[in-house]
Length: 434
Image (cartoon, rainbow, N blue to C red; front, top):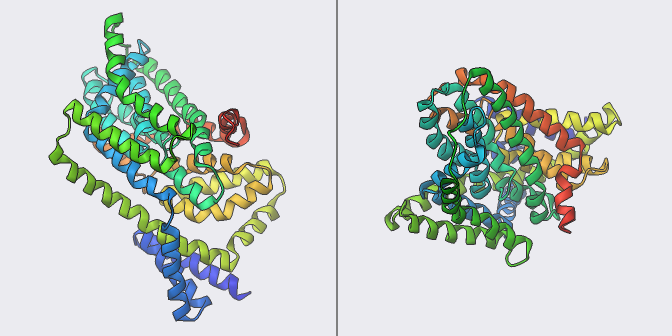
C-alpha cells in the first residue's frame, strides 16, 4: 500500500471517528486534514500550507455574496415580508383541497426564492401558516410535513448560497448559469409536494378556501408586488449584466432594509441585532469553507479523487448506474453533513467523473445541491427538519412517517434532474449562459 493511500485512509477514518464522537463538522474536517498534512510533509511546511489554504479558500470575491444574502434573508424574516407572501400564496392556492397546505408550499417557494434560505422559509412561513392551518382543523403533523418538505426549494431557486459555494469550488462555472439552472428543478420539487399534499388533503377531507372576490385578489397581489420585485431586481440585474451576483447580494440587503422599514416591521434599533445574527451564521460558514480547503488540497495531494473515480468506474462503465451510485452516496452524505462542507469535499471527487461521462458542470452542480438539500430534512442533522418541527409544535418522531411519501416524490424529481439534462440546462441555454 502506497504512502498516499495510507494517508488518505488516516484522513477518512479520523474524520469518521471524530464525527461519530460528536465533534463539530468544521473541527473534524480541520483536525483530520491537519493530521494527514503532517503525515505527508514536515510539520513546519504542513502548518504553513494549512494556513495558506485557509486563507486561499476564504479569499474569494464570489463568497462575499453569502453574508449579504444571509443578511437580506434575516432582514426579510424580521421585516413582515413573509406575511405578504403568505397572503399572495393563499390567493394562488385558490380553492384546492387543503388550500392552506398548498399556500404553505407556494409561500416557501416565494420566500426561499427571495431569501435563499430553506431554514428561514421553514421558520417564517411555518410560524405564519401553522396557526391558520390549526384553526381550520388540519392535523399538525400533516401541516409540519408539508412545510418541511417544501422549505428546501429555496436552496434550488435562486439566489442560493450553496450554488455560490459550488461555483467557487468548481472553478469556471458561471453563477448566473447555476442560478437559472435551479429554477425548473426547484419548481419540480415544489410541484411534487403540492400534488402529494393535495392527494392527502382529499383523503383527510380538508376543504379549499372560500371564494375570493376580484378586489381582494388584486389588493393581495398589489401588497405582495414590492416583495416579489426583489427577485426581479436581483436576478434580472445579474442576468442583464448590471451587477455581479456579489453586488446583487448587496442590492438585496439595501432593498430588503428599505422595504422592511417602510412596512414598519423593523426599527432602526433592530438592525444591529439582525446584523449580529447574520455575522454568526456567516462566521460558521466561512470557518467551514476555510478548513474544508485544507481537506480539498490534502485529497488532491494524496490522489483521493482519482482513487474514488477508479473505484467507481471499476464497478461499471454504464453512466446511468454511475450517476445512480453518485446520487446514493450524496444522499447518504447529506444525512450527516451540512451542504457547505459536503460541496467543498465532494465536488473535487465527483465533478471530474460526471464531466468525463458527458454531464455538464452546471447540471452536476444542480444535482449536487438537490441531493444535499434532501439532507436538510432528514435526521440526524436536518436543520430544516428541526426548524419545521419546532415551529409546528410536533416531534421529529411523529412527523417522519408523514414525510416518507414526500421523500418518494422528491427522489423522483432528483432522478428526472439527473437523467434529463434539459430540465436544468434548458433555461440557461435559452438565455445564452452556456
